[in-house]
Length: 505
Image 1 (tube, rainbow, N blue to C red):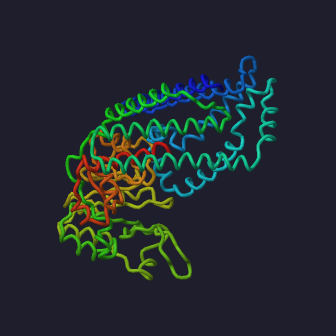
Image 2: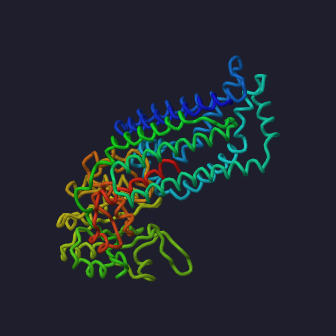
Image 3: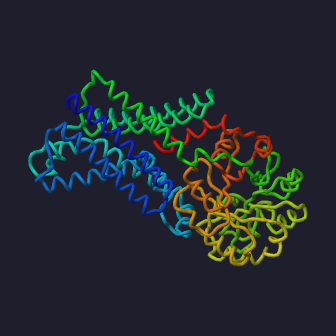
Protein backbone atom coordinates (compact mmCIF):
# COMPACT_ATOMS: atom_id res chain seq x y z
CA UNK A 1 0.00 0.00 0.00
CA UNK A 2 1.17 3.51 -0.69
CA UNK A 3 1.05 6.29 1.89
CA UNK A 4 -2.51 7.40 1.12
CA UNK A 5 -3.76 3.82 1.12
CA UNK A 6 -2.03 3.23 4.45
CA UNK A 7 -3.73 6.32 5.88
CA UNK A 8 -7.05 5.05 4.57
CA UNK A 9 -6.44 1.71 6.29
CA UNK A 10 -5.64 3.44 9.58
CA UNK A 11 -8.85 5.46 9.31
CA UNK A 12 -10.73 2.22 8.62
CA UNK A 13 -9.21 0.72 11.78
CA UNK A 14 -10.39 3.80 13.69
CA UNK A 15 -13.90 3.39 12.31
CA UNK A 16 -13.87 -0.28 13.33
CA UNK A 17 -12.76 0.69 16.86
CA UNK A 18 -15.75 3.05 17.11
CA UNK A 19 -18.05 0.27 15.89
CA UNK A 20 -16.58 -2.19 18.42
CA UNK A 21 -17.12 0.20 21.34
CA UNK A 22 -20.68 0.96 20.24
CA UNK A 23 -21.49 -2.73 19.78
CA UNK A 24 -20.04 -3.53 23.21
CA UNK A 25 -22.22 -0.83 24.75
CA UNK A 26 -25.28 -2.31 23.05
CA UNK A 27 -24.45 -5.79 24.32
CA UNK A 28 -23.94 -4.42 27.81
CA UNK A 29 -27.41 -2.85 27.75
CA UNK A 30 -29.18 -5.68 25.89
CA UNK A 31 -27.31 -8.84 26.83
CA UNK A 32 -29.68 -11.44 25.41
CA UNK A 33 -27.95 -14.20 23.48
CA UNK A 34 -29.63 -13.23 20.21
CA UNK A 35 -28.36 -9.66 20.49
CA UNK A 36 -24.84 -10.89 21.31
CA UNK A 37 -24.92 -13.17 18.24
CA UNK A 38 -26.11 -10.31 16.04
CA UNK A 39 -23.41 -7.94 17.29
CA UNK A 40 -20.77 -10.67 16.87
CA UNK A 41 -21.96 -11.24 13.29
CA UNK A 42 -21.64 -7.51 12.61
CA UNK A 43 -18.12 -7.57 14.05
CA UNK A 44 -17.23 -10.55 11.83
CA UNK A 45 -18.47 -8.74 8.71
CA UNK A 46 -16.56 -5.58 9.63
CA UNK A 47 -13.34 -7.51 10.31
CA UNK A 48 -13.64 -9.41 7.02
CA UNK A 49 -14.24 -6.13 5.22
CA UNK A 50 -11.24 -4.43 6.84
CA UNK A 51 -8.80 -7.24 6.12
CA UNK A 52 -10.15 -7.75 2.60
CA UNK A 53 -9.61 -4.07 1.86
CA UNK A 54 -6.02 -4.25 3.09
CA UNK A 55 -5.26 -7.48 1.22
CA UNK A 56 -6.74 -6.08 -1.99
CA UNK A 57 -4.60 -2.96 -1.70
CA UNK A 58 -1.53 -5.12 -1.06
CA UNK A 59 -2.10 -7.68 -3.83
CA UNK A 60 -3.89 -5.37 -6.27
CA UNK A 61 -6.32 -8.25 -6.92
CA UNK A 62 -9.99 -9.00 -6.19
CA UNK A 63 -12.00 -12.18 -5.54
CA UNK A 64 -14.75 -11.43 -8.06
CA UNK A 65 -15.45 -14.22 -10.53
CA UNK A 66 -13.71 -16.92 -8.46
CA UNK A 67 -16.45 -18.72 -6.47
CA UNK A 68 -14.27 -21.51 -5.03
CA UNK A 69 -11.65 -18.99 -3.95
CA UNK A 70 -14.38 -16.84 -2.37
CA UNK A 71 -15.61 -19.85 -0.38
CA UNK A 72 -12.06 -20.66 0.77
CA UNK A 73 -11.59 -17.03 1.78
CA UNK A 74 -14.81 -17.11 3.82
CA UNK A 75 -13.82 -20.34 5.58
CA UNK A 76 -10.36 -19.00 6.39
CA UNK A 77 -11.95 -15.78 7.74
CA UNK A 78 -14.14 -17.83 10.07
CA UNK A 79 -11.00 -19.70 11.15
CA UNK A 80 -9.26 -16.41 12.03
CA UNK A 81 -12.36 -15.18 13.88
CA UNK A 82 -12.48 -18.36 15.99
CA UNK A 83 -8.78 -18.02 16.84
CA UNK A 84 -9.45 -14.52 18.19
CA UNK A 85 -12.18 -15.62 20.63
CA UNK A 86 -9.82 -17.02 23.33
CA UNK A 87 -7.75 -13.82 22.98
CA UNK A 88 -10.69 -11.66 23.99
CA UNK A 89 -12.03 -10.81 20.51
CA UNK A 90 -11.69 -7.09 21.37
CA UNK A 91 -13.93 -7.53 24.40
CA UNK A 92 -16.61 -9.60 22.67
CA UNK A 93 -15.53 -12.92 24.18
CA UNK A 94 -16.85 -11.99 27.63
CA UNK A 95 -20.27 -11.16 26.22
CA UNK A 96 -20.36 -14.38 24.22
CA UNK A 97 -19.36 -16.73 27.04
CA UNK A 98 -21.63 -15.04 29.60
CA UNK A 99 -24.65 -15.21 27.28
CA UNK A 100 -24.58 -18.85 26.13
CA UNK A 101 -28.00 -20.34 27.00
CA UNK A 102 -27.19 -23.75 28.50
CA UNK A 103 -29.30 -25.61 31.05
CA UNK A 104 -28.40 -25.88 34.72
CA UNK A 105 -27.65 -29.59 34.29
CA UNK A 106 -25.28 -28.85 31.41
CA UNK A 107 -23.61 -26.13 33.48
CA UNK A 108 -23.07 -28.63 36.30
CA UNK A 109 -21.65 -31.32 33.99
CA UNK A 110 -19.21 -28.89 32.35
CA UNK A 111 -18.09 -27.56 35.73
CA UNK A 112 -17.57 -31.01 37.24
CA UNK A 113 -15.48 -32.04 34.21
CA UNK A 114 -13.77 -28.65 33.85
CA UNK A 115 -10.19 -29.91 34.07
CA UNK A 116 -10.53 -32.41 31.25
CA UNK A 117 -12.50 -29.95 29.14
CA UNK A 118 -10.09 -27.06 29.78
CA UNK A 119 -6.94 -29.10 29.10
CA UNK A 120 -8.43 -30.56 25.91
CA UNK A 121 -9.57 -27.11 24.76
CA UNK A 122 -6.12 -25.61 25.39
CA UNK A 123 -4.38 -28.38 23.44
CA UNK A 124 -6.79 -28.05 20.52
CA UNK A 125 -6.50 -24.28 20.51
CA UNK A 126 -2.68 -24.33 20.57
CA UNK A 127 -2.69 -26.68 17.57
CA UNK A 128 -5.20 -24.52 15.68
CA UNK A 129 -3.28 -21.35 16.56
CA UNK A 130 0.05 -22.77 15.34
CA UNK A 131 -1.56 -23.89 12.09
CA UNK A 132 -3.19 -20.47 11.75
CA UNK A 133 0.11 -18.67 12.30
CA UNK A 134 1.92 -20.95 9.86
CA UNK A 135 -0.73 -20.37 7.17
CA UNK A 136 -1.45 -16.75 8.07
CA UNK A 137 -0.67 -15.51 4.53
CA UNK A 138 -3.08 -17.94 2.90
CA UNK A 139 -5.70 -15.26 2.28
CA UNK A 140 -3.10 -13.10 0.53
CA UNK A 141 -2.19 -16.17 -1.51
CA UNK A 142 -5.84 -16.66 -2.46
CA UNK A 143 -6.07 -13.13 -3.83
CA UNK A 144 -2.67 -13.25 -5.52
CA UNK A 145 -3.33 -16.57 -7.27
CA UNK A 146 -4.98 -15.71 -10.63
CA UNK A 147 -6.74 -19.08 -10.99
CA UNK A 148 -9.78 -20.28 -9.07
CA UNK A 149 -7.81 -23.03 -7.28
CA UNK A 150 -7.73 -22.64 -3.47
CA UNK A 151 -5.67 -25.80 -2.96
CA UNK A 152 -3.00 -24.51 -5.32
CA UNK A 153 -2.83 -21.29 -3.28
CA UNK A 154 -2.56 -23.38 -0.10
CA UNK A 155 0.38 -25.38 -1.49
CA UNK A 156 2.15 -22.17 -2.52
CA UNK A 157 1.60 -20.70 0.94
CA UNK A 158 3.08 -23.79 2.59
CA UNK A 159 6.12 -23.72 0.30
CA UNK A 160 6.74 -20.04 1.03
CA UNK A 161 6.59 -20.48 4.80
CA UNK A 162 9.42 -21.62 7.07
CA UNK A 163 9.55 -22.59 10.71
CA UNK A 164 11.79 -19.58 11.36
CA UNK A 165 9.23 -17.15 9.99
CA UNK A 166 6.52 -19.03 11.92
CA UNK A 167 8.52 -18.56 15.12
CA UNK A 168 8.91 -14.85 14.40
CA UNK A 169 5.16 -14.53 13.90
CA UNK A 170 4.54 -16.37 17.16
CA UNK A 171 6.89 -13.97 18.95
CA UNK A 172 4.99 -11.09 17.34
CA UNK A 173 1.73 -12.37 18.81
CA UNK A 174 3.31 -12.78 22.24
CA UNK A 175 4.75 -9.27 21.94
CA UNK A 176 1.28 -7.96 21.14
CA UNK A 177 -0.16 -9.56 24.26
CA UNK A 178 2.73 -8.27 26.37
CA UNK A 179 2.28 -4.75 25.01
CA UNK A 180 -1.42 -4.73 25.89
CA UNK A 181 -0.61 -6.04 29.38
CA UNK A 182 2.05 -3.42 30.02
CA UNK A 183 -0.17 -0.62 28.72
CA UNK A 184 -3.00 -1.66 31.03
CA UNK A 185 -0.72 -1.96 34.05
CA UNK A 186 0.87 1.41 33.27
CA UNK A 187 -2.49 3.18 33.05
CA UNK A 188 -3.62 1.50 36.27
CA UNK A 189 -0.48 2.71 38.04
CA UNK A 190 -0.94 6.26 36.71
CA UNK A 191 -4.48 6.31 38.06
CA UNK A 192 -3.35 4.91 41.38
CA UNK A 193 -1.09 7.93 41.71
CA UNK A 194 -3.33 10.55 40.04
CA UNK A 195 -6.86 10.38 41.42
CA UNK A 196 -9.07 12.12 38.89
CA UNK A 197 -12.21 10.97 37.08
CA UNK A 198 -11.20 12.65 33.83
CA UNK A 199 -7.84 10.89 33.94
CA UNK A 200 -9.61 7.58 34.60
CA UNK A 201 -11.92 7.95 31.61
CA UNK A 202 -9.10 8.99 29.28
CA UNK A 203 -6.95 6.12 30.55
CA UNK A 204 -9.67 3.58 29.84
CA UNK A 205 -10.18 5.21 26.45
CA UNK A 206 -6.45 4.98 25.74
CA UNK A 207 -6.42 1.30 26.73
CA UNK A 208 -9.40 0.53 24.50
CA UNK A 209 -8.15 2.40 21.44
CA UNK A 210 -4.48 1.42 21.60
CA UNK A 211 -5.14 -2.21 22.56
CA UNK A 212 -7.66 -2.77 19.78
CA UNK A 213 -5.49 -0.81 17.35
CA UNK A 214 -2.36 -2.81 18.18
CA UNK A 215 -4.19 -6.10 17.81
CA UNK A 216 -5.75 -5.12 14.47
CA UNK A 217 -2.42 -3.93 13.06
CA UNK A 218 -0.57 -7.03 14.25
CA UNK A 219 -3.23 -9.32 12.76
CA UNK A 220 -3.08 -7.33 9.52
CA UNK A 221 0.69 -7.81 9.33
CA UNK A 222 0.35 -11.53 10.02
CA UNK A 223 -2.09 -11.77 7.12
CA UNK A 224 0.50 -10.14 4.87
CA UNK A 225 -0.98 -6.64 4.58
CA UNK A 226 1.83 -4.21 3.83
CA UNK A 227 2.02 -0.71 5.27
CA UNK A 228 3.94 2.35 4.11
CA UNK A 229 5.60 4.79 6.49
CA UNK A 230 3.54 7.96 6.95
CA UNK A 231 5.68 11.09 6.79
CA UNK A 232 3.02 13.69 7.56
CA UNK A 233 0.69 12.06 10.06
CA UNK A 234 -0.77 15.05 11.93
CA UNK A 235 -4.28 14.26 10.72
CA UNK A 236 -3.92 10.59 11.68
CA UNK A 237 -2.64 11.60 15.13
CA UNK A 238 -5.56 14.00 15.63
CA UNK A 239 -7.94 11.25 14.57
CA UNK A 240 -6.36 8.91 17.13
CA UNK A 241 -6.75 11.48 19.93
CA UNK A 242 -10.40 11.97 18.97
CA UNK A 243 -10.86 8.20 19.18
CA UNK A 244 -9.39 8.14 22.69
CA UNK A 245 -11.74 10.89 23.84
CA UNK A 246 -14.70 9.05 22.27
CA UNK A 247 -13.68 5.80 23.97
CA UNK A 248 -13.39 7.64 27.30
CA UNK A 249 -16.91 9.00 26.89
CA UNK A 250 -18.16 5.49 26.16
CA UNK A 251 -16.54 4.36 29.42
CA UNK A 252 -18.48 7.08 31.22
CA UNK A 253 -21.71 5.54 29.91
CA UNK A 254 -20.87 2.11 31.33
CA UNK A 255 -22.81 1.60 34.59
CA UNK A 256 -20.16 -0.85 35.83
CA UNK A 257 -17.76 2.10 36.15
CA UNK A 258 -20.25 4.40 37.83
CA UNK A 259 -22.01 2.22 40.42
CA UNK A 260 -20.31 3.07 43.69
CA UNK A 261 -20.28 0.37 46.39
CA UNK A 262 -23.03 1.18 48.86
CA UNK A 263 -21.84 -0.97 51.76
CA UNK A 264 -18.99 -3.22 52.82
CA UNK A 265 -19.33 -6.79 51.54
CA UNK A 266 -20.80 -9.46 53.81
CA UNK A 267 -17.98 -11.42 55.43
CA UNK A 268 -18.19 -15.19 54.86
CA UNK A 269 -15.60 -17.25 56.74
CA UNK A 270 -14.16 -19.85 54.33
CA UNK A 271 -14.29 -23.41 55.76
CA UNK A 272 -14.79 -21.86 59.19
CA UNK A 273 -11.12 -20.84 59.40
CA UNK A 274 -9.56 -17.41 59.94
CA UNK A 275 -5.90 -16.96 58.97
CA UNK A 276 -5.10 -20.69 59.32
CA UNK A 277 -6.10 -20.71 63.01
CA UNK A 278 -7.82 -24.12 62.84
CA UNK A 279 -8.50 -27.11 60.62
CA UNK A 280 -11.17 -26.41 58.03
CA UNK A 281 -14.60 -28.03 57.99
CA UNK A 282 -14.44 -29.18 61.62
CA UNK A 283 -16.68 -28.57 64.60
CA UNK A 284 -13.57 -27.35 66.46
CA UNK A 285 -13.00 -24.52 63.94
CA UNK A 286 -16.70 -23.64 63.97
CA UNK A 287 -16.73 -23.42 67.76
CA UNK A 288 -13.52 -21.41 67.87
CA UNK A 289 -14.46 -18.79 65.28
CA UNK A 290 -18.19 -18.43 65.91
CA UNK A 291 -17.23 -16.19 68.86
CA UNK A 292 -16.43 -13.42 66.34
CA UNK A 293 -20.04 -13.40 65.11
CA UNK A 294 -19.32 -13.01 61.41
CA UNK A 295 -22.48 -13.16 59.27
CA UNK A 296 -21.73 -16.60 57.80
CA UNK A 297 -19.38 -19.55 58.08
CA UNK A 298 -18.97 -21.34 54.76
CA UNK A 299 -18.18 -25.06 54.85
CA UNK A 300 -18.19 -28.15 52.62
CA UNK A 301 -19.96 -31.48 52.79
CA UNK A 302 -19.71 -34.74 50.85
CA UNK A 303 -22.18 -37.62 50.61
CA UNK A 304 -20.84 -41.13 51.17
CA UNK A 305 -21.92 -44.22 49.26
CA UNK A 306 -24.32 -45.15 52.08
CA UNK A 307 -25.88 -41.66 51.94
CA UNK A 308 -24.25 -40.10 55.01
CA UNK A 309 -23.10 -36.50 54.88
CA UNK A 310 -19.65 -35.72 56.24
CA UNK A 311 -17.74 -32.45 56.60
CA UNK A 312 -15.06 -32.58 53.91
CA UNK A 313 -13.82 -30.44 51.04
CA UNK A 314 -11.88 -32.80 48.77
CA UNK A 315 -13.71 -35.24 46.55
CA UNK A 316 -11.04 -37.89 47.20
CA UNK A 317 -9.74 -39.41 50.41
CA UNK A 318 -6.67 -41.63 50.83
CA UNK A 319 -7.33 -45.24 51.86
CA UNK A 320 -4.26 -47.36 52.74
CA UNK A 321 -3.54 -49.90 50.04
CA UNK A 322 -6.10 -48.37 47.69
CA UNK A 323 -4.75 -44.85 47.12
CA UNK A 324 -7.11 -41.93 46.57
CA UNK A 325 -10.77 -42.93 46.49
CA UNK A 326 -13.83 -40.79 45.84
CA UNK A 327 -15.90 -40.17 48.94
CA UNK A 328 -19.03 -40.94 46.92
CA UNK A 329 -17.75 -44.50 46.38
CA UNK A 330 -16.90 -45.22 50.03
CA UNK A 331 -19.20 -46.05 52.90
CA UNK A 332 -18.93 -44.15 56.18
CA UNK A 333 -17.45 -47.06 58.12
CA UNK A 334 -14.54 -47.37 55.68
CA UNK A 335 -13.78 -43.66 55.88
CA UNK A 336 -13.92 -43.59 59.68
CA UNK A 337 -11.63 -46.60 59.88
CA UNK A 338 -8.75 -44.50 58.52
CA UNK A 339 -9.75 -40.85 59.06
CA UNK A 340 -11.49 -38.70 61.63
CA UNK A 341 -14.37 -36.80 60.05
CA UNK A 342 -17.13 -34.74 61.61
CA UNK A 343 -20.69 -35.62 60.69
CA UNK A 344 -22.59 -32.77 59.15
CA UNK A 345 -25.60 -33.40 61.37
CA UNK A 346 -23.44 -32.76 64.44
CA UNK A 347 -21.87 -29.71 62.77
CA UNK A 348 -25.29 -28.22 61.97
CA UNK A 349 -26.60 -28.81 65.51
CA UNK A 350 -23.51 -27.09 66.91
CA UNK A 351 -24.01 -24.11 64.60
CA UNK A 352 -27.63 -23.79 65.73
CA UNK A 353 -26.59 -23.96 69.39
CA UNK A 354 -23.93 -21.28 68.83
CA UNK A 355 -26.25 -19.10 66.76
CA UNK A 356 -23.89 -19.18 63.77
CA UNK A 357 -25.54 -19.15 60.30
CA UNK A 358 -23.89 -21.38 57.69
CA UNK A 359 -23.45 -21.39 53.94
CA UNK A 360 -23.12 -25.09 53.14
CA UNK A 361 -21.41 -26.13 49.93
CA UNK A 362 -22.82 -29.38 48.65
CA UNK A 363 -19.94 -30.96 46.75
CA UNK A 364 -20.72 -32.68 43.45
CA UNK A 365 -18.85 -35.24 41.33
CA UNK A 366 -19.72 -37.45 38.38
CA UNK A 367 -20.55 -40.17 40.92
CA UNK A 368 -23.00 -38.09 42.97
CA UNK A 369 -26.34 -39.82 43.45
CA UNK A 370 -29.07 -38.08 41.45
CA UNK A 371 -31.29 -37.70 44.55
CA UNK A 372 -28.61 -36.25 46.81
CA UNK A 373 -30.46 -32.95 47.20
CA UNK A 374 -33.68 -34.71 48.21
CA UNK A 375 -31.89 -36.75 50.88
CA UNK A 376 -30.13 -33.65 52.21
CA UNK A 377 -33.45 -31.87 52.64
CA UNK A 378 -35.09 -34.91 54.23
CA UNK A 379 -32.28 -35.46 56.73
CA UNK A 380 -31.66 -31.86 57.79
CA UNK A 381 -34.83 -29.94 56.94
CA UNK A 382 -35.88 -29.21 60.53
CA UNK A 383 -32.38 -28.11 61.55
CA UNK A 384 -31.84 -25.98 58.43
CA UNK A 385 -34.74 -23.66 59.25
CA UNK A 386 -33.66 -22.79 62.80
CA UNK A 387 -31.22 -20.16 61.51
CA UNK A 388 -30.94 -18.45 58.11
CA UNK A 389 -28.66 -21.18 56.79
CA UNK A 390 -27.96 -21.29 53.07
CA UNK A 391 -26.82 -23.96 50.60
CA UNK A 392 -24.71 -23.35 47.52
CA UNK A 393 -23.24 -25.73 44.98
CA UNK A 394 -22.16 -26.19 41.38
CA UNK A 395 -24.89 -28.85 41.26
CA UNK A 396 -27.88 -26.91 39.98
CA UNK A 397 -30.25 -29.94 39.89
CA UNK A 398 -29.52 -30.65 43.58
CA UNK A 399 -30.19 -27.01 44.49
CA UNK A 400 -33.57 -27.29 42.78
CA UNK A 401 -34.34 -30.45 44.78
CA UNK A 402 -33.51 -28.71 48.05
CA UNK A 403 -35.53 -25.63 47.12
CA UNK A 404 -38.60 -27.71 46.33
CA UNK A 405 -38.35 -29.49 49.68
CA UNK A 406 -37.28 -26.46 51.74
CA UNK A 407 -38.65 -23.35 50.00
CA UNK A 408 -37.57 -21.00 52.80
CA UNK A 409 -33.90 -22.04 52.57
CA UNK A 410 -31.92 -19.85 50.18
CA UNK A 411 -29.83 -21.69 47.58
CA UNK A 412 -27.00 -20.34 45.45
CA UNK A 413 -24.99 -21.34 42.40
CA UNK A 414 -21.22 -21.70 42.79
CA UNK A 415 -19.09 -21.08 39.70
CA UNK A 416 -15.64 -22.55 39.11
CA UNK A 417 -15.43 -21.30 35.53
CA UNK A 418 -17.56 -18.22 34.91
CA UNK A 419 -19.53 -18.81 31.73
CA UNK A 420 -23.10 -19.15 30.40
CA UNK A 421 -26.18 -17.05 31.06
CA UNK A 422 -26.51 -18.07 34.69
CA UNK A 423 -28.89 -15.19 35.43
CA UNK A 424 -31.72 -17.38 34.10
CA UNK A 425 -31.27 -20.03 36.78
CA UNK A 426 -33.76 -20.25 39.65
CA UNK A 427 -31.42 -19.56 42.56
CA UNK A 428 -31.42 -16.99 45.36
CA UNK A 429 -27.76 -15.91 45.13
CA UNK A 430 -24.50 -16.53 43.29
CA UNK A 431 -20.99 -17.34 44.51
CA UNK A 432 -18.63 -16.44 41.65
CA UNK A 433 -15.01 -17.45 41.26
CA UNK A 434 -13.28 -14.08 41.64
CA UNK A 435 -10.41 -14.48 39.14
CA UNK A 436 -12.65 -14.71 36.07
CA UNK A 437 -15.50 -12.53 37.34
CA UNK A 438 -15.83 -9.28 35.40
CA UNK A 439 -18.08 -6.19 35.43
CA UNK A 440 -20.48 -7.53 32.80
CA UNK A 441 -21.09 -10.84 34.59
CA UNK A 442 -21.55 -9.25 38.02
CA UNK A 443 -23.83 -6.55 36.60
CA UNK A 444 -25.87 -9.14 34.69
CA UNK A 445 -26.64 -11.30 37.71
CA UNK A 446 -26.85 -8.24 39.96
CA UNK A 447 -29.63 -6.74 37.83
CA UNK A 448 -31.84 -9.63 38.88
CA UNK A 449 -31.80 -8.27 42.46
CA UNK A 450 -30.07 -11.37 43.83
CA UNK A 451 -27.00 -11.25 46.01
CA UNK A 452 -23.60 -11.87 44.43
CA UNK A 453 -20.73 -13.31 46.48
CA UNK A 454 -17.15 -13.89 45.32
CA UNK A 455 -14.66 -16.57 46.36
CA UNK A 456 -11.98 -16.91 47.64
CA UNK A 457 -10.84 -13.34 48.33
CA UNK A 458 -7.78 -13.45 50.58
CA UNK A 459 -5.54 -10.61 49.39
CA UNK A 460 -6.40 -6.97 49.93
CA UNK A 461 -6.13 -6.54 46.15
CA UNK A 462 -8.81 -9.14 45.36
CA UNK A 463 -11.02 -7.86 48.19
CA UNK A 464 -10.90 -4.31 46.85
CA UNK A 465 -11.39 -5.37 43.24
CA UNK A 466 -14.48 -7.42 44.02
CA UNK A 467 -15.89 -4.70 46.27
CA UNK A 468 -15.36 -2.15 43.48
CA UNK A 469 -17.19 -4.43 41.07
CA UNK A 470 -20.19 -4.43 43.41
CA UNK A 471 -20.31 -7.90 44.97
CA UNK A 472 -22.45 -8.06 48.10
CA UNK A 473 -20.36 -10.63 49.95
CA UNK A 474 -16.93 -12.26 49.92
CA UNK A 475 -15.83 -15.73 50.96
CA UNK A 476 -12.42 -15.39 52.59
CA UNK A 477 -9.78 -17.09 54.73
CA UNK A 478 -8.82 -13.63 56.01
CA UNK A 479 -11.99 -12.45 57.72
CA UNK A 480 -10.21 -9.88 59.91
CA UNK A 481 -8.50 -8.35 56.86
CA UNK A 482 -11.84 -8.02 55.11
CA UNK A 483 -13.40 -6.63 58.28
CA UNK A 484 -10.77 -3.87 58.40
CA UNK A 485 -10.95 -3.15 54.66
CA UNK A 486 -11.55 0.49 53.82
CA UNK A 487 -13.08 1.17 50.41
CA UNK A 488 -12.55 4.58 48.80
CA UNK A 489 -14.23 4.60 45.40
CA UNK A 490 -12.26 7.56 44.01
CA UNK A 491 -8.94 6.31 45.33
CA UNK A 492 -9.40 2.65 44.36
CA UNK A 493 -11.02 3.22 40.97
CA UNK A 494 -7.75 2.32 39.22
CA UNK A 495 -8.50 -1.33 39.96
CA UNK A 496 -11.32 -1.24 37.41
CA UNK A 497 -8.82 -0.59 34.62
CA UNK A 498 -7.33 -4.03 35.20
CA UNK A 499 -10.53 -5.60 33.87
CA UNK A 500 -9.26 -4.65 30.41
CA UNK A 501 -6.87 -7.58 30.66
CA UNK A 502 -9.87 -9.88 30.32
CA UNK A 503 -11.03 -7.99 27.24
CA UNK A 504 -7.81 -8.11 25.24
CA UNK A 505 -5.91 -11.19 26.44
